[in-house]
Image (cartoon, rainbow, N blue to C red; front, side, top):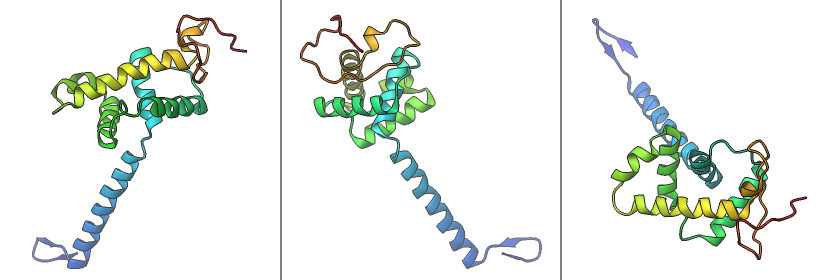
Amino acid sequence: MTEGMGEMKLSRRAALWLLGGGAASVGAGYAAARSLSDEHLVQLVLERYLGPLKIAADDLRSFTQAFRRRNSSSFPTEKLADVAVLLEELGLASAVRPVLPGNRAPRLEHFERWLLAEFQVLTSYAHRQSPDEPVRYLGPRLCMNPFAKFDLS
């Protein structure tokens, strides 16, 4: 940068440096946002409806993978999932959802309904004795009755 008679001028090199740094920041920001995983979206949605959950990362990952395999058409697209995570993180999901364009709001609602139903069936959530008991992924079972009693030991 050079300074002239009270005004500040930016050299071409400094301007290019700033532009490059800005582009790198935007790229890094996008990469960080994109790295928000499916598990993160699933956990945010579950905790919005069910409150804080004690679930091991491996159990959450296994549940998310099983849910995605079983309901691939219900899972939001990458871009919609990114928007959903951002809205969940900002606490704006319920407020902004009605104004989402197109069929995005019904798609997210459909995803959340299936997610909650499958979570009840594929995990120990409904069978816990107390809220402090950790939730475990049980996997698909032949009996899909959420009120059935299973030996979890």
